[in-house]
Length: 173
Image: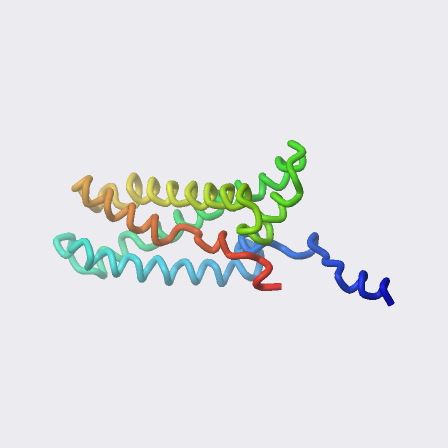
């Protein structure tokens, strides 16, 4: 009887993917891409009116000139943040750090302060890349005013950072 209870409590963590990894796993990646496109579109719409960008022309002109770059660069930045988290899975055991840190990164960021810090760093790296891509590439020729371009790129970066990296995987399993 006790052996049966012990067997039932065994969890196969090696077959459960973390939320941040699942986002890039087929066919979930299609949902991720579509969701990112919708969010980026809504953020561009909100920013167009919040930053009073009407002097650039119509929203349609602004949107068509920027949405694909914002979307693709955002996804690239998210992938870079996920790559950092993925690399941590090799670095943590190599450094002899506790398994609880690896568990926090993969399954519950709030179970270990170190895991939470690593995930927040990955989110911030992604956000910084989103900002840089949009400031230096997407809006470089579209918005001449550097202060306005900075504010727009910063707003998009803050709103579209991969906040989902912070979601505990244990919520889904």
